[in-house]
Image 1 (cartoon, rainbow, N blue to C red):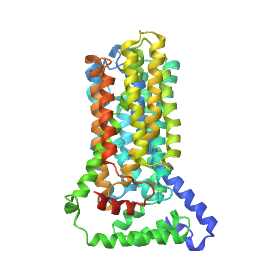
Image 2 (cartoon, helix red, strand yellow):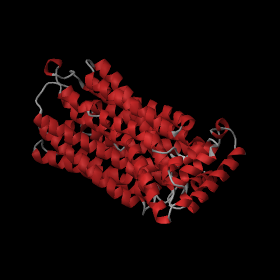
Image 3 (spheres, helix red, strand yellow):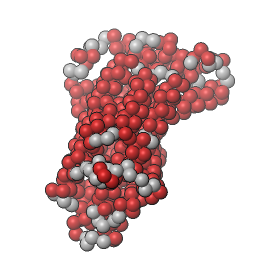
Image 4 (cartoon, rainbow, N blue to C red):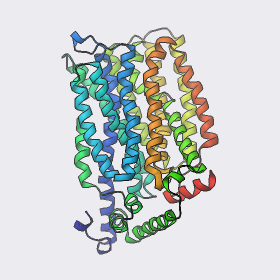
Length: 473
């Protein structure tokens, strides 16, 4: 790609800045097709489940409480495997090639879920799709962070979360429209088939973006890293400055222990544990209980299926607005401050929802009050917690093992997600509405964890963060 582009030195400064901004925009847009697929695949199940629970004779799969949780959680277990495997592939073969391989799995998995004739094959196809979702969740933020540079990193990595919630909104809107307009058996199959589209766009797009300059430098390909940096930075001076940092880091790496020895060092182990703890914090808010099961929660208040699907669009709208606010806030406030603010509101809303469902009579007022609690919860979850989580996953870990540790931490996050997705229908069936009080109690513990354990990373380059973590932990 560098050979077909004017060198940075040959371009006017304004032209170079515009060219760099354009290439970064294209690269982020392509990479976040993986996030869009992630969002759609995790969101569409909320619209598909009410139809999949219908008897086979009526076009469904005859799901019960157990198989409903199994179908939902199979994607998430696959995501845990995918995020872990993609960490290895990302470090070994590069971020760009990993995204290309994941796009093929997105397409195959979506096709499999849309055509699955039985619960067993549906679970298998959802697992394959989950590998792609999890791999994208671990690879996309790292790729964007390494493409973007320090000044753009927070804003651009946060677009990953924006595309996730946009995919979920798209899923909710299409679910409601298709439920209202289409009255054919197996309508859920059409909902699931649409997931192939972002996978195809991701596959095509990976042929038009550069490789990560940090990955190239880590592999000793300094000339290639320099060529990419000259395309991505506003001036040759910026590119040279970053290249010098990468060379210095590589020189230091020669004196570092091997990867196996590095993984035994206390500060690296503490970082990994913090990353895993953040995944627990993000998922045990209960956010995906709402993203997957809001229509079922609302139906339990007496709302009809189509009305519940339409109301769920509010989840997607609020999530998109909240993420836009989060992109603004994340550049102005520290990571710790945003996380703790979000967790305080999450605790309050989980407790409020439990009270609404437990003590209010079952009528339309209860439905609206429950929906209001869910929407306020999502506003602060998607503004203060989710964007910060994905940003921290892209910047916490040392470059030598960034792909591996990010993949491991995100993999554990997916396992926590799967636990919530599988257990929530059973918890509602056995515990009932007090389930939401349990979530509130867990989130108080998460707030304590963030307060005492999470270091601040705002305003530091990736290299500076690594030095800071080594000294601080």
